[in-house]
Each structure stands twice: as structure tokens, then as C-alpha cells.
Length: 222
Image 1 (cartoon, rainbow, N blue to C red):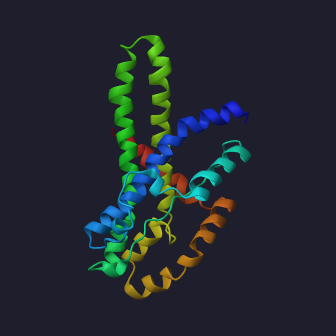
Image 2: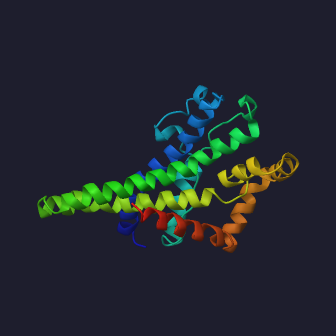
Image 3: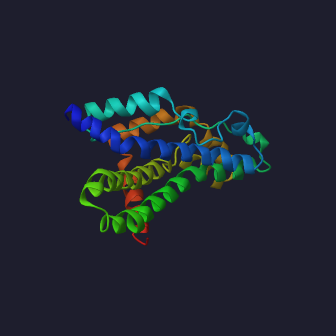
């Protein structure tokens, strides 16, 4: 991938990625706050300012290096997790699962919004604006919206992998009986190592790809 291609890819993906991770993390803190845990609010994480959610390594350095060295075939990253104290919840097990589910569901909602803007705003406008405006404004906007759909669907699907500390793992803990939930939650300190192994071996694709396809089929309803 040459330098101009890298810059073009970054220009198309940067804003959708920032919006996706910002609202993903914001939703965790917002729901937790509504359920009785003000930790994220007190730490200034209930904000749409992406700087509050960016992790320098996970959000910037790692995705850029993977974009360059894998020729855009594999990009992975993460944001700073929103701090949540489940001891503030009335029902810690249930409320932790609800706040965890908020992130992926927010990404699905963002994918729906991106699709609706693309379908009912950008496409109709392209038939009326001058060709030059379409090429300079609407075409890049359409590419960013398409990227937003894919990014949000993939982010939601990836985070639903049922291994803590990913959202899917925390949701699963909320559904398990108490004893099994405690046992399963003990793998959380090793969860990201397990997830990286699953990604590196391709095993994660057996979960993520069907989830992506499911969400894309649901989006066709819109």
C-alpha cells in the first residue's frame, strides 16, 4: 500500500472510527450512571469529546501500524475502557450486563443512522447538486458513511465475543447462574490474551463473521 493510499484510507476511516469508539464507550458510562454508578461521570468520561476515550496505543498507534504492515487487510484497536464500579448497582450482575450490552447496541444504532443518511440524504442529493460538488463533497461523504456502517457492525460483532472483558463476556456473566458466573468471570485478567490468540489463529472469525453477516442482513430492512 503506497503512502497516498494510506492517507486516503486514514481520511475515510478516521472520523467514523472516532465516532464509533466515542459513542461505544460513552454508552457504557451513560447506562451505568442511569443504573446508579456515577464513576464514569465523576471521571469526565460522559462526554462526546473523543480525546477522553482515545488510548494512544490502542486507538492510534496499533491500528496505523496494522494498516501499514498488513496492507489494510487486518486492523485492530481499542479505546480506553470506561470505569464502572458494579458495587454501586442495585443488582450488580444484571446491571453490569445491561451496561456492557449498551456499547455494541449503540454501534448497531450508529450503523443504522449511517445507512439512513446515506440512503435518504446523500443519494437523493447526488441527483441535484452539480457534478463537481458531488465529486468533492458527496462522494467522500458516501465513502465515510459506508465505512461507518462496516466499522460499527464489526466493532459490535467483535465486542460480542463471549469472553470477558469484552462486552459479550460480561453480558454472558449476567445470564449465567451465580456460581458459574463467578467462575467464568475469573478469566477476565487473561481475557485479552485469549482474544488476541483467537484473532491470530483465525478462530475469532467463526464468531465475528456470522455476527457481521447477521447485522448486515438486519440493516437491509432499512
